[in-house]
Length: 494
Image (cartoon, rainbow, N blue to C red):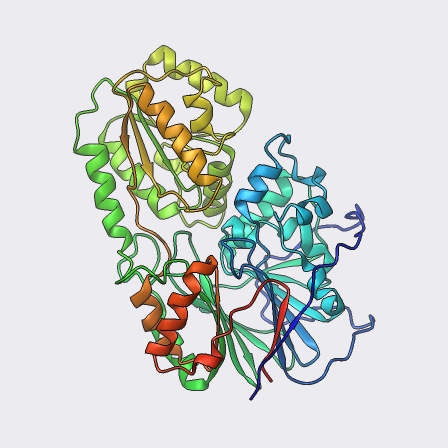
């Protein structure tokens, strides 16, 4: 067993525009075996073994994408956005994804630079998506057409992807194949993929286990071990132990909060914090505005349950809220619309709704809006800075059921909106939230269950890496088998 590193600098080669001839071939049939690539094209031959290239996501938060070569077959895990860079790049844009220039997005660091795996493109057999957060799935519309293979994800992730592609009029030639959490699919004669259910802050999150003759390659971003989830089941610990017993060659592990002691609290804690902020204070005659992550369906479920107790009309405002809720309703995961929730999506509808709210009285509504990070184009920012027909009054309530993602420009955005709301005399409730990411003891339990031979820490900035390396050593793992990689760097395991 040996490991060697080869640094491949990014190459900004020109790429062709997406062709209109690519018709969307979304396949909801749930087939469990299929030919992933055209049998007639020429594939490149590579030496036997396992080689890994983190295209993005190592040493940074976001832009998740990892390619793994097993002999002559290549598999891609996630194709995500770097959200701060993407937001900055599109600040002055109309929001039409189909008009964004892919090469410019690469150079801006908003999407992964997959030129680092260009020699592997014809050998890619499948693209796997672990969950539907944009830092894992958001760059699929821009890059997936580079690969003649299916996209395999949970039904919820596929549902969201279909909505994004339809709304933005983007066509992919890739088949979209749903695989249920805890499902298994024979992808090629040599490789089987398994989705292991875990808990996170979005429905149907999975760890992706690639079964190969060399051992299991386990892609484990993002997750937490929540034994009392609000939506869905607890993590599939038995499957993780089974994989460990079989033999895990490599884990690619979420380390965002590896330096946080203890275990990450359950979502039930956030639910009780939310109950207090919504029902435990006197908000009579005042506006109640709540902002949270649009993808956090479990949190939205709690907001609706408590909102009904206020006897106010519940209104969701914002495009991203609409997309994530619709994706959940399309697969019968929830049914917020039938619960009396009004979902307002488009600009003209939004302005009409705010005029109605101001006319009838803000205290008759519970408003759930986008903008928990203070993003300039979000609904809450536009409300706060007077860009919509809505005005706050002193002593109105704004609840941030979120935490600030600790990267620029999010920190600056939140400082600006918090300052503005405080200047208007708003009562702020912040950090009504628990994270969906594993803390140090969760990661320790994960390593004990799976007992990997090698690990690559990912989804965190460089200052977290030493903390993971220390934890790896505490678990009795050989220090030389924890590999700290930069995007585009190669690791040959076998």
